[in-house]
Length: 62
Image (tube, rainbow, N blue to C red):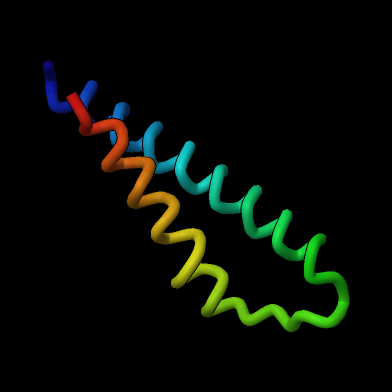
């Protein structure tokens, strides 16, 4: 497999993981309602970034 194909595959996995985590964050926001505060650092660092990394790792599975 060429380097370009691997890069595209990893990018796709990361994008899918990021989209899944963003959907999960939106769901959590709807469940919590107005009582919950939103911190951008917490959202990006503890929810979206791990989601993207998990997406990349899932693509690498044989």
